[in-house]
Image (cartoon, rainbow, N blue to C red; front, side, top):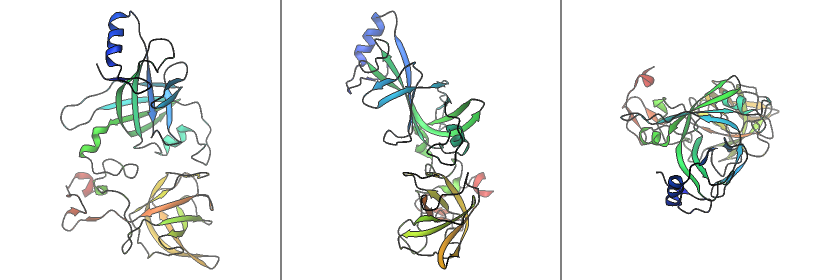
Length: 307
């Protein structure tokens, strides 16, 4: 039997095992945490009919959600689990803070989010505190599919990170050329540049005023070519955590002031909001195709890298 932890952090495995042997019935429910516990955007769900409080993690709210069976594979392939959620919010907006989960799933917003699942044991209806819960599954959202009235998440076990170089929340899992540790400063800099959004952009063109490492700095043409642009999260942000690949960057003059303009490969769901949205940019991943090495990692050719 898996370890069971009560709401106050006590190991109740033996108590629950004895209860299961002596009792003719047991009330079970599942708990789901999508995202990080300290993230205001995290989603706390249970398939039980009322909220369940498990104090060491928090309170999980009723939702239309169900899971498949955990698929365990032989060899290096990790375990997977399908999670189906039917959120009640169906309102489409132009802000990630208020957008429907269906809309966010279509944008890939939840890709690579952590998901934790537990089984809770209740001696009386609604009591998730006394016995507590045991771990069921943990992993990352590898794929999101929006269907009629539901979102289906394909979860890959946490063990996925053991043999993957890919930085989370940035590049798709199978992109071997992205095998590096995270954002990369442009040549000659040691800090990731941050920008404020300036008016005049569109869904695939973003104009930014550099705030760090040097206010007002305009970077060389194509200093960020093949890199990526990520919008910061925060109060009022309309594109928080949304990212896009950079086709090229150039200098642009608006109202007599020089700024940085970024042309994106893939269009944003809506234009960024000037004076509200901020973002950072990364140069292209540190790869040297000539000698076949990455910075920090050995380069292993694959079909994806040769396309």
